[in-house]
Image 1 (cartoon, rainbow, N blue to C red):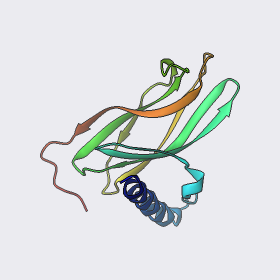
Image 2: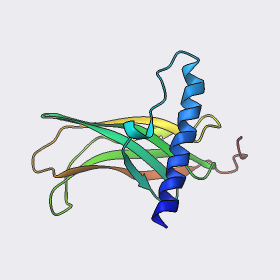
Image 3: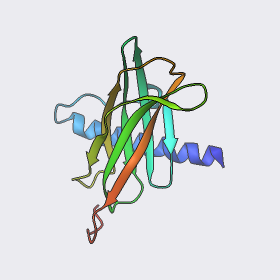
Length: 138
């Protein structure tokens, strides 16, 4: 089952790459490739892919979030630093993503200042909301 989940996420990220390629015609930067976003998280409502940039006083996660349900209108993401016991020791401010177009993928950037003791970093979905009564887009 893991291969199927991974391949679905890969297709979602590849689909996003196509969408970003179309947007690139309007002057934006080129679409990221799967290799450029090596970290992945998939849950019941979202597909996330990101990369980390680690510096001594700053950690940045840059990536894409895809909604699985087109009635989801907003999501709040957070980058957290975890110690060896998986306890949160640092965290970024929340990033609010709002879907205002029919595209199901949106980009994000999260930054935190490490406090020390971080063994790994994760992007987490903190909250999301539905746009009640919204017509299905697309």
